[in-house]
Image 1 (cartoon, rainbow, N blue to C red):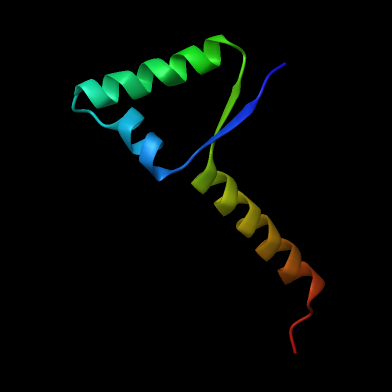
Image 2: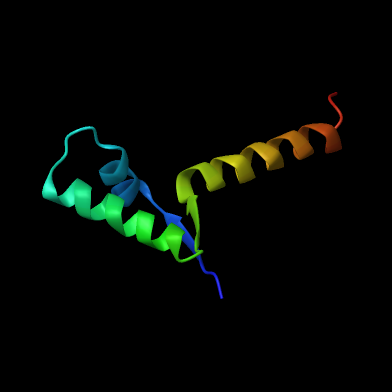
Length: 66
């Protein structure tokens, strides 16, 4: 069974950090292992932004301007 894993700014920052420290390497390996196990990874911030943008577009079309 696959699990959806939401990454917030902390883990996402570690994974994308260009400085290769022991923490960034461990975070990258953890994400690689989760993907290899078939888990789905999502960035929580991007998911929220997409949800809000979708809501704004729908509200714009539902409410007529005066």
